[in-house]
Each structure stands twice: as C-alpha cells, then as structure tokens.
Length: 118
Image (tube, rainbow, N blue to C red; front, side, top):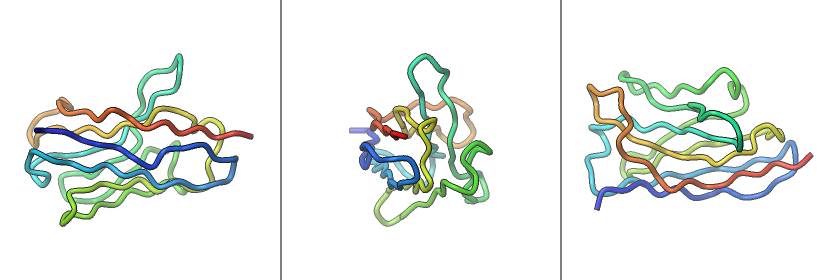
C-alpha cells in the first residue's frame, strides 16, 4: 500500500521545538521527491521544505534558520526539525511525494497537527 504517515505533532509553547517524521511505504522512496507542507485554518497551503534534485534539503524563507529538513534513507523517513516555534507556525503539517519528472504531488499523508501557544 502506497502511503505516507506523519507523526510528531503536538502542542507546545512559543519558543519550543518539535520534530515531525514522515514514513514512506509502498513506493520507491528514492524515486520520489518528498516535501513538507502546512496549512493553517483559512490560509492557503504552504510549502515548508523538501529535497531538490541534487539531494539538498531546502526550507521556505519563512522558516529558514528555525526549521531544518533531513532524511534517513534506510528508514524511508523524512524529518522536519522545528525550533523556536511561533504561534504563526500553528497548522496542519503534511508530507507529500511526487515522482521525479513530475511537478504534481500525488501521494499525501493524513497530516499531523502542530499548535503553538503564546
């Protein structure tokens, strides 16, 4: 079964940290680009970070310096380390995968909620 499963969300106070995990199964992890997205209520979905074709981890400017992305290829797992969290980081976080050569993310996880209180 092709799926992505996120975990690690929760509620923290401003300035706190969380590490999200995205476990991939049922497809060739290395043949897909996997990224993190987030969506807050009433807002558009936002790309948070992912790996480019050269295997370099990149994050959005809005989280640069606070979030880092990493992966464990042996575990088919992508991570999002979130430090210095702010209330505006509150959102549902999703990981998604697109096949190399395609711009469309076809596989989505169920999401994990991150809530940051001030």
